[in-house]
Length: 525
Ligand SMILES: [Zn+2]
Image (cartoon, rainbow, N blue to C red; front, side, top):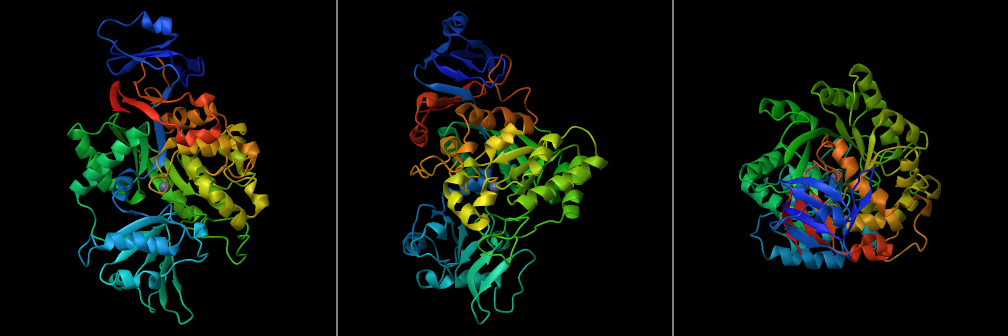
């Protein structure tokens, strides 16, 4: 045996034997799982033994929804997430301005006016005086709405004559002048920012990888483009890619990828092309998630429809034609209904087993629980969003609808496969934050005391399952990944505490002791 972990508490993910106390690894694969006595008997002189009493081990944690290279890029950008006022954002921007040459873009993200003392949305005037010569784009925590300064508006050609792009909205003052706040506009602004070079992307991926491994993440499902794939493929060729990456691509790139030999569901065990990624709607925070009934705080709107059912169906069929399946972003309940409608229609033309998934599923229509299960579509959710979203959800959807918000327990009870991720860089990659959100349904301050819709709280075991077993299945790697059983690739996460003995409130402060990928210790605390 190469490695053995003994005297620990081990969640195996294997339904025949969900818990064990020891595991050993040979040639990158799990060789045996069982009692310490059983595993110790297999160890030899050269076995590296880890005594892990008081720790908890899981199959390698997989973050099933994030933006990996972009997360690495944002690790170097301004982080506004914890700030509680516009004044505080100004201070952080000021510090960034002095480090950049005039004309260089300054990018930041994570602001959230709902936690600001200002109680209002920001505009260019708030930052023009401190950044007259640098174009600035500050992305809201939702990842969609941008706060830009006048220099950025000049470069983007946004004037009072500019017509809103379809599905997007430029906020204006009473005179019709753009104020520097644009909804569904990040992609449009990003087009005029010089893109990072291949080397910058590779460096970003390595930063993201180090951070992921530090938090016990052995695999990710990343929603990005061919440019990010290229960076990851280059790292794999240089043997620097240690984490496993299931990569989605937008529909426009499927043919281009194929011409270069990158095919749906194919690749190595480090990097493979999983699903085609689509968007059905916007987000909760920006009021663009698509709803069956109008917003509680703005009855004039039901949100934004990014693609019609027919447009979605066409793109889903493209994925099916290439032998793959889809991952569709849907946050509002009507968006989810539309996705199921489109998938149903596409499957009627392309029958056969599928591993489709809906990303986020923050609000469900009660009638859709059974449809999800019957169609075997996976709900791909990010519990950590709940920390900031619960109050916003109640305000925007109203308490009645919130019964079906972030309804993970109801999904499991309905027989739906549920998987979890962080949506980094939108949220922190640390899975312990999601464990806490899923199990306690409280914010980090412990509110509400009984948990938000406490009937939807999950157990630790259910949470592990959503971070291990299910992502292996949706990425078509369940034969090699997702559980600790003989013959599986040896990806393990060792938490420094026995999480099952911790109060849920203590979960965010727990730590990772060791991260093993393919039998190699990739991180050790
Ligand atoms: Zn995302």
